[in-house]
Image (cartoon, rainbow, N blue to C red; front, side):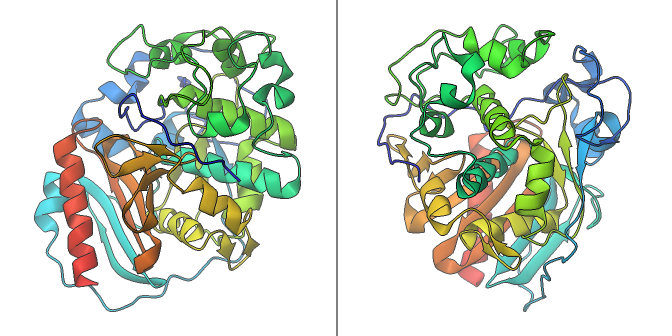
Length: 394
């Protein structure tokens, strides 16, 4: 279980997993077992952060057609989502103003509200950005349950010996999960010299994992466990660690450990990087209802119709507030954002993606969107106001 750390955060970072390197072809539904594509650079027209709003609204549902992805088949036993009494809420103005593609409310296991915009349909997939981080965290819990990861107190270098010799030498798995490694990282996506930009622009080495090679070269900024710093590179590192520990591609492991037991009714797609590997920090595309099932999985502490995902203790620890943000009710767990009130927690991604989970009220609310900007306080506040309206009606 993740050890609780009470830390002063350096500041809230972008809620984003950076867009991995993209191929110029469109093989869409690549299997993780296929030969990885040759190294390539990010084509200028595939830098999602800088797309005009019109293209983002059109193409966030088409990512598997544009860039190589690993396909995750649907569960053989889909979980029913029965309809409950419809909520009487006028949300048309909100959905139009906030460019909402999908809004789903599940209360006590029943769908109380399901609405679509921007041309999205129930069968369409939508890019999640950093909501994927919470899935990668869940795979750590599954690997702990399997015994392929022994404990989160283990050193990261125990599982990634090629990472040894740098700033990660005394960093634990738990500290990477809670983004408290102390390793220097700049997540500023407006700065072309930032690590977040250079990480995906740097050609991968021929004889090493690109994530490990880049992070190994970073300096230490603080002692491990003392400071929080949002770091998509480290979630990618978690993905590498899980793949190494289990001996399996992340998409295959997600299929067995989450997609099947949680009863996902549709396939999902996980974006591949330039070495043909899934990026742990970003970019699973799935349907609105299946994102709702992800929320139910976390709300139910992994006790889903198809069995137990990880352990209840894993989910309790991962969604607990390990990092406090001063003057805010928000915090951070193990790749989940937290809220002090009622032990609420969230998976979040830029441009308006969110799974909000409120265990006390037995509610899951999912937003898929294409905000005109990556992040914004006013838009976040508008979304929270809608969540409050929904809960008031419930």
